[in-house]
Length: 272
Image 1 (tube, rainbow, N blue to C red):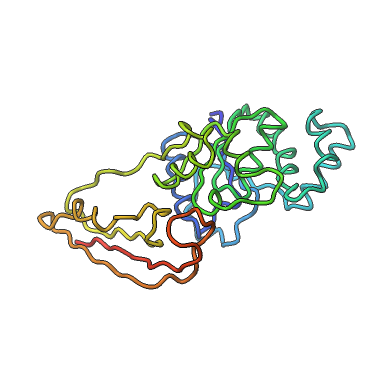
Image 2 (image 1 turned 180 degrees about the horizontal axis):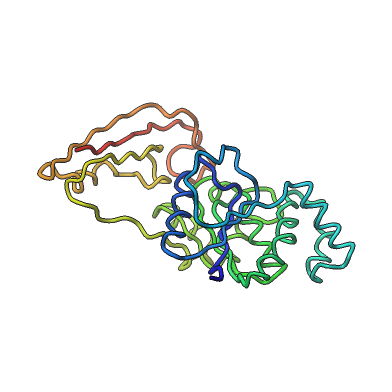
């Protein structure tokens, strides 16, 4: 079965980002047939992950990839755009993203893939941006927090990434509004992934969000909304635990709250 799109990651799997792993597993289970591409190899043992019934393709290490691309260029095996882009951009900061795109583009074309979705704005999305520039592929991405809130000094800016994306996925109303206010051209193309809205009433288990209690995380007023879901008559009780933030959360002064000020965090557990 041909792949419907490529799902591009900086590193996959990564067990500090288990939610990304679960998303990929569910896409495979639903028959979406993404081509999973990781630019870097996982740091954890393969034994920690359940086995996917699908290939996870890993790019070569950075130096080996650049060497291979230069060799292809010397043999005139690259497209005209890629051939001309290398000497022009190779010494720029973050030029590895261009090399990754030059290397990956022919593989995507060979598989008939015309769209790439990338997760997190730091590494994978600039690579997808270069795939669009050099090979005409469309891309979209999922952005979370610092990867979209914090500006960079790279030649390909966050504004470029948002402007040229086909669509952008994020998790909170705050992030959507922030992006649409910061980048007016983003209005109408920032949305949310499907969410689990309903579950078995009275089911045993725990719901444990762990994050700074702030607008960026979508938890503002979260504890006021939970009692509507966790009704006593359903045999569900509600517990809160609060502690001081372990680190500062201040990517920019335009974010909610005072820049640089530690925030309290809250963990909410729902248990039968």
